[in-house]
Image (cartoon, rainbow, N blue to C red; front, top):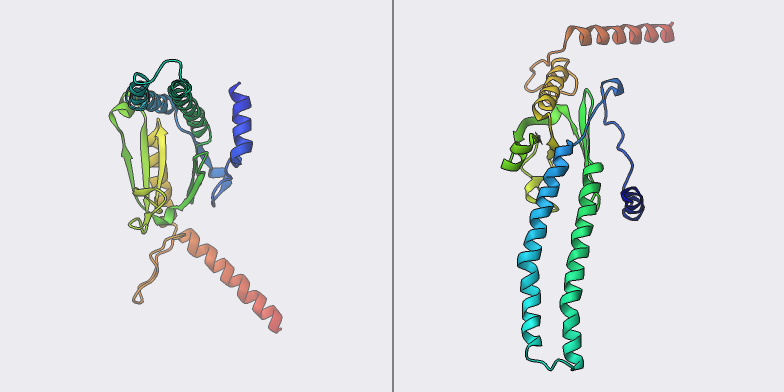
Length: 246
């Protein structure tokens, strides 16, 4: 049943397929997914929202209607229409909560975190699909955050801050920036952070992708392997130039 609903929602919402790997060596690509316990975490939040709807929102909507009904004649057409109002409201609330449950499952299934040796790509969302690619040369900070329920479930969120993280994205509000990527609900947040940090260090040590350009005549440091490769390219260019002149 869920597979059919998923396929229909993918077609209706035009959900794109699995994201391709970001720039980098495909042999180094590693794919991380949200942990199954993250789905339990989402279910817990959905359950709390449903309880709030049933015991707070629903009474606030239905009780005033019932109060009006007490003042109407039982057999009048107006009273009959008023009787339909609470049932319609209840049906709409149930339908909305079921829809939220389906979207919640889809959001879990369609969440991707792809890491290469040079960059990171994060895909999340189903109604609003968000895909963000972060190059390791621009990463400034990696931090792990956990709430009480997340600690109990053994999951965490990994936050990746990049250069220029002070500008706000109006779509997500003040807590979300255009220069912040989130790997939500992963069970091995510390391992993923260490992997990204190691690849950031390796990239910067090689002199590739380092955005600290030469300033004031200072010389940029390259690894011996990079210098050797550049010398080979220079030698081939000179040989080609001499062949053309000859």
